[in-house]
Image (tube, rainbow, N blue to C red; front, side, top):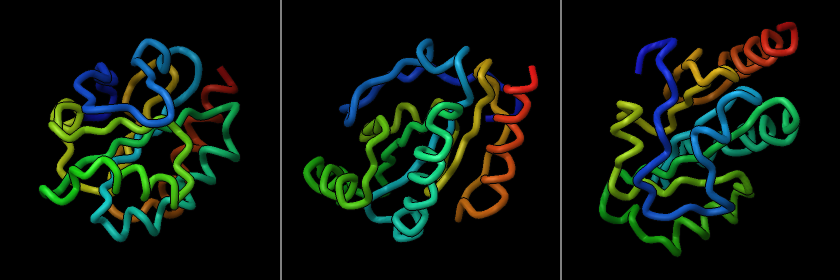
Length: 149
């Protein structure tokens, strides 16, 4: 995806955990952060506390949606996906993308990967690898823009 492109429809989930959301529910209210991860990705697990912190600290100003993207056949085990999500306190909606349909819609190739959309559903930031300070700065910028508008 390129910057300023519209958020894709959230279709093709193998399953949803923690409740299902649609594009229409996400666009228009507040910014949305998509977090692509995989159970076989150690860096993904390492970054989950920071993603959960975004979810909790900005709950009234940011929506967070996790997308489980399998990297191999071993990543398709639903029980293991649920177990890892529980172990890492992922309470946000989780799109299980075992057929990689949303992954294709986002043109995503990596985990962890982060896509930040503004409240109008336009992509404002994309990054792969550790979330770190750069992602936090971008999230705060998009939240501030929304609140000033």
